[in-house]
Image (tube, rainbow, N blue to C red; front, top):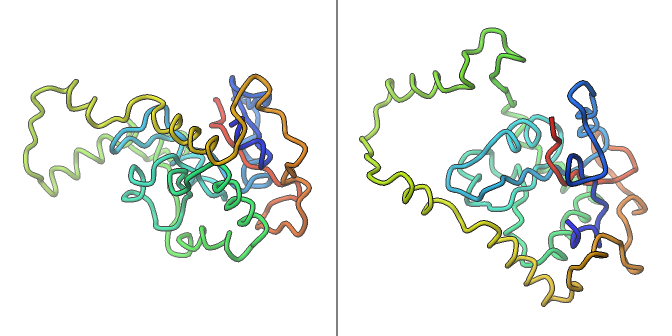
Length: 225
């Protein structure tokens, strides 16, 4: 986040940031009104591992979700509905793309074209009284019975799981290394401060977006509940 803050204004909620969102507050509504993007990074980069960070906030609100790895999510979500960090060689290139989308309403809105044909429905007891419990496990079991698949026997669960996950921090470390080589100053204790040649997005001109205020920001942290 320290690197990205040099190019774009970032709001961080929860234990890692200065902003809080208590359970009884309605601050999540700000996602629709104040932000263009939502960073939906998981705590692990693993095959088929997607949690509520993407489903609830990323697709439950009118923002464009940002994920770390394209290959992890693209087969489960509508095309051109998210931004993947690994599509860009450096933080600089990612920030340039985000700023370009904020200043170009037509390009930004292309990330919402899938909503013409689909809508997001979160099946849980809090929002749907008729939904089954266990957060959808019953539905998954029923589908496996309706359309049986070849039996897969995993002999060593620990080995199977380890092979499906990337080494913790490996992708982020490499991404930051490339960014430093490309000209981004090394990260240190003062890295969160904006340098003098960086223009925060809140001062950008001709900012356009649906249901967004002129105070342009990017929500770069999962809101803690």
